[in-house]
Image 1 (tube, each protein chain N blue to C red):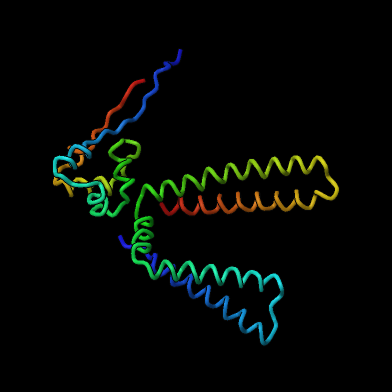
Image 2: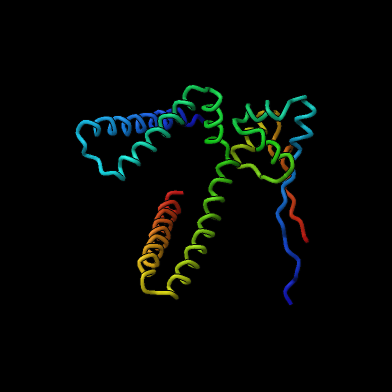
Length: 135
Length: 77
């Protein structure tokens, strides 16, 4: 089975170039906020460089295709996602509890982290439900 | 009292033996199966059990039946 590694890198390249073009236009029109300027500059450079390197080297594309096909690599990827989710949740929960004890000015952090954990868990439940119906 | 014996599913295979018989390198087998060399290594060491698709592909590569390559054993521990 052939994967679309080349297509993905092409998409990355286009996105990178678009970011850099946006930055170039901004030099004349000045419509981007400072935050987006930094984001577009770093993202544009990284996306363009990395995808160009990958697209110019056939062995990289071959390796990426192989990684997309290899069931063991896929299994490792999904397990590492599961394990890292549990670890991150434990860390976030601990931070929430510790910061919650101090209260006051830390409460916005607690609510942000809690919202992120809840959102992530909800998305996971939804995706799992969809997948369990599909597969 | 509940028995303390646990049943562990165990899959053994003859991949390494078959590969060496036919003088095939891990890299060559990996390329034919469209997987990485490490996957072939893991299969040979028994650290990883293949999917049914990969098992069929391996069987057809060696021109054997799946059960001639992979042996399922129920082990009582």
